[in-house]
Image (cartoon, rainbow, N blue to C red; front, side, top):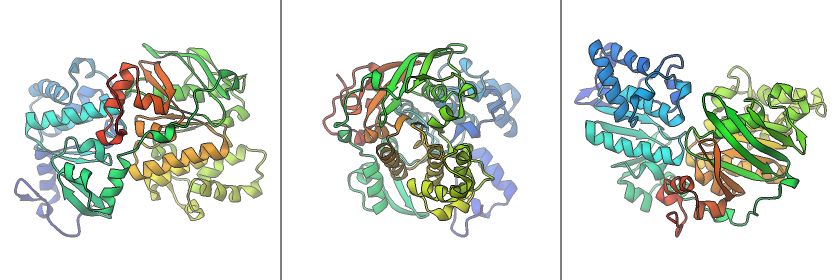
Length: 471
């Protein structure tokens, strides 16, 4: 993609006037780029050392320097024990480790300019805060200039020298982060600041945990052991209309817990019951009615929506398995479902690639609702969205929970999502639930060390005034 006008200069060179070959040479010699999603940026079949060596080979770095450059880059990226990760493949790393490996690949060529696209969007608050702190450190150690693209104004303001607010392809505000946060002059700036200041008061009215006897969904002592325990005795219970937000550091087992409840991963031991009826550990052992009643909304709608099927076909697919919706009624039901999640019927003819991130996430929700579920499992459904869109999706889920009586399990690294949803919060760490309770209490008066660390790592302006997170 070539700009229609303007100029871009890097170290005095006008990039837009260079030929394609020379432009690639300049980028290779001076720039490092870290993509938003390391799951797609890293080659899944290559070990970490091979990922870095591939880049060094392309830059014609002498082979005898590869090992030293790789170790230095991994340490700069905050992986203090590089020997523990160099022989692993991306799927064997946590989200935070994958993001740091992607950063190390960029740092291995010793760039003078480092461009990072939403590097913390899929990280929990503690990992995100640590990543940004390491980013500040490596700026000073390497002297690299950093261009950081993010929708999380509250977090990046703590590390940036200047903040530029964009809207409609234009910079509408530019200044020191303190000034932008304290007194934004643009409408978009005010919206971003407002989205970075969620309170926890809305959760105060939610009741204490309901008794297990009234549970719609009950998981008891779930364990999943592979090389080591991924889940180690996790129990939870939800009544109709309940909401449980599961939070915790990257790699603690949050997504694994959802996959076990959905039957996509079979727990080593433990039991899952739906209205007292035992569910098979493997989804293939559940009957169609049981499968419809528990629906999972994956983290990445780009990967979960068939890119070659229209929105109407995607949302309508589950209707084919509902005997209460005859074929003649299915088109009208698709329109109703799209309307229910805030989408117009005209989007039914589009492919997922023609939708925004927020629209794709709503389509994924509509597809789950098409099965007429009683339990909705949401895996980081706001992680890749900007704050205003994330807020809208969170409010949509809260409304659906109230209107339909859905029990919702929300896995999230964003404690502001848990604050907005209310209900209860469970803190997962090393495969175990360390603390659980009403969102209002847990976010304002955390008791466990892990919870205190998560709350303390929230951007300052995201916490309600007067919260005590040190006790």
